[in-house]
Image (cartoon, rainbow, N blue to C red; front, side, top):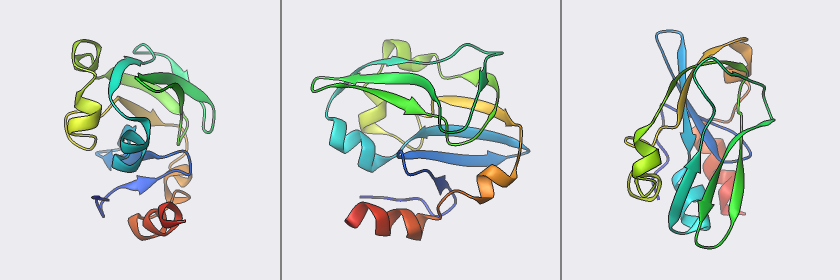
Length: 126
């Protein structure tokens, strides 16, 4: 199971990649493997505000529906609309094709407070 070293991770199994002051967010390989085959993804709209540790969308798998929890706060500036027609990307490519949203972070300290890849791997071993 891959855990890219250049990302930060939340306890709710979301990942964050900061590029040029913007934060790209998705769910981890571990999360998608636990959920099983993803059949539907519900995401916020561009312009919506998300708040750290609060739901910002959901993923539906053949097993269950799970809320997506914002790892950081910010304004949604981009949404991966490809997931509407191809939710299977979440299973196939959780770190590349299946990013979910891009936000302008409200507080960059929230990113620093997230887990490193090593810390996340340690948490998911338990």
